[in-house]
Amino acid sequence: MTDAFVILTLAENDYLYGTGTITIRVRQMHSGELISYHDETWYEIHGVQLGPTGRELGERTVLVRAARLR
Image 1 (cartoon, rainbow, N blue to C red):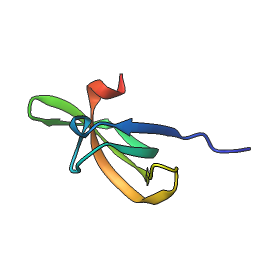
Image 2: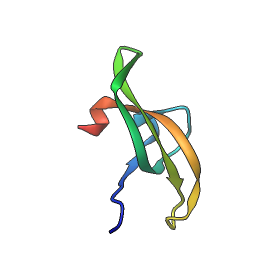
Image 3: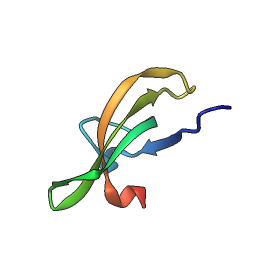
Image 4: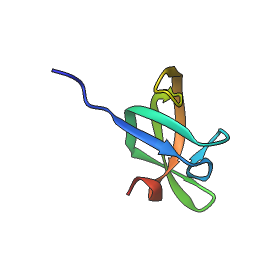
């Protein structure tokens, strides 16, 4: 049996604390802990950032715009 992960590709304006587009394999999303910032709702997501070839670049925590996840 293999684990299923969600992979998100996020534009710079869809996440906080980084520059450029990123791809992240989500390991955990804190859906019960909404964060309000600049009059918008954000979720904290933990995962592994992936490079253009799918290679793991390292652990990453980002705040993702809730509207992007709908």
